[in-house]
Amino acid sequence: MRVLAIDTALGACSAGVFEAGDNEPLARETIPMERGHAEALLPLIDRLVSHVDGGFESLDRVAVTVGPGSYTGLRVGISAARGIGLAAGIPVVGVATLSAFLAPLMAGDSRGLFTSAIDAKHGHIYIQAIAFGGKVIIAPSLMSYRDAIRVLGSGPLLIAGTAAALLAAEARAQGVEAHVIEDSPAPDIAWVARLGAIADPANALPKPLYLREPDAKPQDGARIARR
Amino acid sequence: MRILGIETTCDETAASVVSTGFDGRGEILSNEVLSQIAEHARYGGVVPEIAARAHVEVIDRLIARALKNADCTIKDLDGIAVAAGPGLIGGVLVGLTTAKAISLVTRKPLMAVNHLEAHALTARLTDGIGFPYLLLLASGGHTQLVAVRGVGDYVRIGTTIDDAIGEAFDKVAKLLGLPYPGGPYVEIEARKGNPERFALPRPMMGRAEPNFSLSGLKTALRLEAEKIAPLTPSDVADLCASFQAAVVDMVVDRARVGLRAFRDIAGDPKAIVVAGGVAANQALRDALQRFAVETGLRMVAPPLALCGDNGAMIAWAGLERLRLGLVDDISAPARARWPLDSTRDEAGAKA
Image (cartoon, chains in turn green, orange):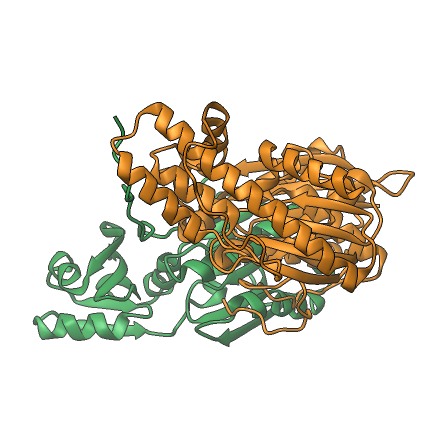
């Protein structure tokens, strides 16, 4: 199965074309960036796919990170993925950024509490944690650092994600053993592709996973009294 | 020629397929609009983040539906047009990115259309009128008099110095406790009311520059309302009628001044055209029709379904641009602000 993987949810604009089971990508490119994903993504995909024999017609599916992450960034990636899926007539699957950080930890040799943590600003993180053996300790959630450490318990924590270093520091400050395995600004696009290849398109919908309600308050307004 | 049009600049997600008939006029093959009114109602206005979230949920399915209802596939298209602004940037990015992706995969031309230009050219889609014409563009976000001299050739004659007309209608509705979005409800109330009960000001009347101002009128209405509060249903109707009458008087006066300015810039107009959501207001249409008769001009107002934001006008503007070879590529920027008469190479917004 040939997968086009796209990630614009965090600190990179990243895409790759992978043949499931192969170790080497057919093409991949990652540009670190905090802003500007919207301008960079389609030209990047254009460059990649032009290096792949068969072009868009050879793709079997599109995998895209759905967050949590930058609202605008993940909407850019999802819009592009859905547009490509529609035009090429292929399924589009969503991959959570938290899962894309967790998967390589769980595939590694180390034992501990596998934790992915993404900076959510204002003293909070998006977090997911799975124990060795597969038990879910924290389902994808928005939490303060302090609450996260409380729920994670005694460790040792194996942490990946953009907030890995900060979470590890907070853990150690509270006497919990913690190791930063990976703290790159965005997930490895190869893992997005791997998870996308095995995802079921009926369940892994390319819908944003915000984990936070929009910041808006209902108004009563300065309405004038009516009889 | 068949063009897909995509619109996501505010609170409607819209997609449409438009083709050209034998006489060069447009033929709307499908026109799908999903309004987000219910999602914004409790906030009393459009919340940008809620709008962007709603667009991305439905955009691809809505395009698929527009294609299906036009009885065609993506392969049958000659180009993809999308509103690249002006508007709420989060929503614009959803539509623009989707359109770019479709253009990239299919290698079909992309037209990054100015939303205001699409409103401006709608009268050519529906009535096939020639250039030049005087356009009154009035919606919740825009109030402008424009000399439309050709595709891509617009001169703004006047604009509002504060609120847009549609915005003022919505604010009045909110003040009087009418449902959201308030413009149409103000019009319904106005029909039952006495427009002469409250002597509201006609801002800008008689001024030589064809600009608009709404905020003083809105304040005057609030003061009148506060004086007689609590309001009975007939008070509300009279307030709405008096407000609408003041707006209509101002618009006709501004159009008269604008027409003089038009003749200096573009010669004799072929028509007076009204477009945008406020063009759905019947009192305004009637008054402009009388003004047009008085000046010997034809008045063109789009059918109600094409007054508000829609994909057909985007598709048509894209079609007009493609006919002239005015195409864009996948580097086209999304623009929160994009004046109609500006050059196209201003810096775009960053995501």
